[in-house]
Amino acid sequence: MPHTLTPRYILALAILLLVLFSPVQAAQLFYLGQKIPDIHKPWNSTDYQQLLEALSKVDSTQLNALPRRSGEFTGPIYERMVSEENFRPQLNIYSPLELRQNEAREVLFRLKELMRLYFDFRAVQQPYAAEALGLMSYSMRQQAVLFTLTTEFWMTLSAAEQSNPVRLQGLHETKAAAAMLTSSALDYLGLTKQFGRDELLLYSAELSKQLPELFVHLSGDVRALLLARISQLAEQHPNSDVQITMTELLPVLTSIEEDIQGKLAATAAQPRKAATPSLDLSVPQESAQQP
Image (cartoon, rainbow, N blue to C red; front, side, top):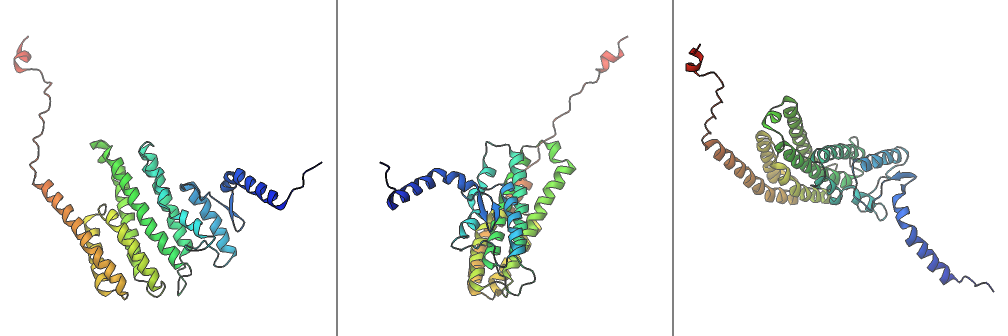
């Protein structure tokens, strides 16, 4: 006689099937009909590209439908978008350094594209204010990771390679990109009409955590300009809480600058090593006079 499937038995079976097939389902995620990468594992540049393509289609067909930072259902997508875990593969010392450096550069490029998607240049008030600011501060962290990898790669090069114009141009472009990103990050703090008070306060706190790590990699003139701008924000920003955050950040960066200047002065004061005599392979004069 066949057994009757009670509701309790059916529920237990459904839970069992969900557990058994959850890994497969996690790898096939869709957001409003568009396939997105698995949010349960760190993302690489390919994952960010897939997300960018999916969200671009969503944004072109539906209004205010991009994942929200604090959304009940979309929050996990955004959290993965700006997760610190995504940096782990780039910082894995057992992977080839040059490949990790290229990967960090590719991810940073896609983050900038995502920022363009979330930031509406025509809007009086930003529809995705918290999300756009979160992506900016996260991009600062990615830029710092890229700089760390670039410095490590630079130290592996020979003196001849470090003097190579192509290598020098690549390093110059990395520094210029970091300077531009830092300047844009501070520009966002000035958009008090487009961003709300609480959003700017949270952003300034995130920014204050990211800037010191990136600050050490910037050129001297950019660091001086950055210190001047933060000093101005500490005194004149309309949001008093942002003023406090910038006031607390200023001595941290000033201390870093003093340390950099001290090391530069110590290096300049060190006597240069005498040049090693070149090996003389000429024929001795006495030998040259012999028939």
